[in-house]
Length: 219
Image (cartoon, rainbow, N blue to C red; front, side, top):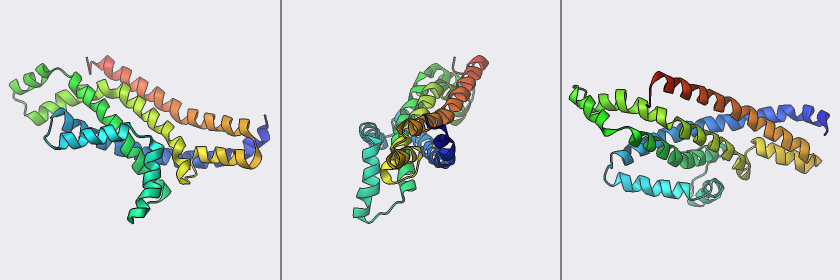
């Protein structure tokens, strides 16, 4: 193991890590918004929109992110739509993540007993107030494990972004392997980089979930 090589190339991984995290944050934020909207549409069974959302979820979940990225990066220019590598990565992550987040939120909403909704109305709350103060807090708490799993999944999926010429962590690792044949060192730094990104997220969400359950939400 060449530790001098590792030490000298740490700055490259730091810059690639920053890019990976930035794209992941934008993509996950967009996926949460899309997923939340889609979950409400399916939960309330809004005509027409429900079918559109259902088709989107099936398409998104049954096609690899890599294929979606290829369509965005190589296919859209044929239609006159040009997107940068970073834009393709963010849009692709939103498109994929939105479907998974939608299912996570929907399962949380459906886990809240209808009697709680009816009880809220009987106490004089409006439908909006019942959703905001009674249903959503419980649904979100119930959804946290799936939500966390989706976040980790989406961050891992950023490893395919190098396919659209984006200098992320995987791109740097492959580049170093190709140039210097330092496979073990490059992969060790790659694994370490992802662990540094993912472990704090796992610990934080686990802590938040325990606190919320201890406080009585989602029971």
